[in-house]
Length: 299
Image 1 (cartoon, rainbow, N blue to C red):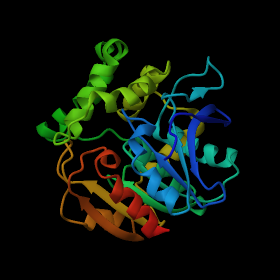
Image 2 (cartoon, rainbow, N blue to C red):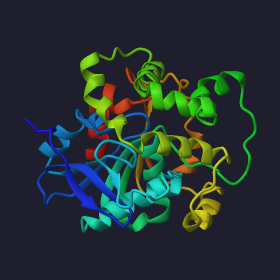
Image 3 (cartoon, rainbow, N blue to C red):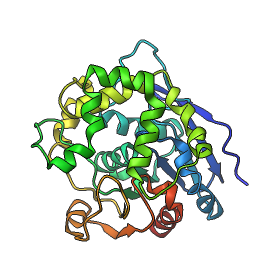
């Protein structure tokens, strides 16, 4: 039985990252990266098969969640995509890890994709849950269909002052609603939600969330150190590391396309593409077996 109850900590140039470290410390490392608005508990079903297979499994809280904090309490609480990816690199380097595999979903998948683009020498393989997730933060996006825009209501909400106040006062209500909306065929228990809910009480959670969604829509400045990186990412560079793409068949953000051509273009070294039944947007929660099996297959 794996004990998920205690965190370890490692300092990077910017953060004190809280994380779980499971399995044989000499095993090949796998990093599992959660997204918004989830936390490390999303991976609890993925970890045991990987540990049993002999891997070392690292599960960090991303900035703004759980026990992760900024070293400088006065530092601006910013969370553009390049920063989240840099946190992954900093985390690995702080642990003395030169190469690892990754799986991520939502923000975590974006961080994994960008890490694979910028530092392919560090990434042996990747499971991209949801496919290619790199944003163009340089050019204004074209309006999407009414249905697509409606599904992204929370992003527009967070770009308003009402959204800021709403997230401060009603964060658990908003998070629970998004969980249920994005995995409409899955029933979350209060027990499962309450295991993750304390992570959203992190004092940086609101600021990190707001900056991420405002920056991606060009309504908030990014960090100067990432200006050049964001310009490169806006070109949509392909991901060359061996990858398996997993897409949830029952995602409340829209059913995945049966056409594999987009994933084949974005991941030239695509090993497999799978539409996973019984899974919503947070696929590791509903189908952890699909994630652990994909990682073991790649490695």
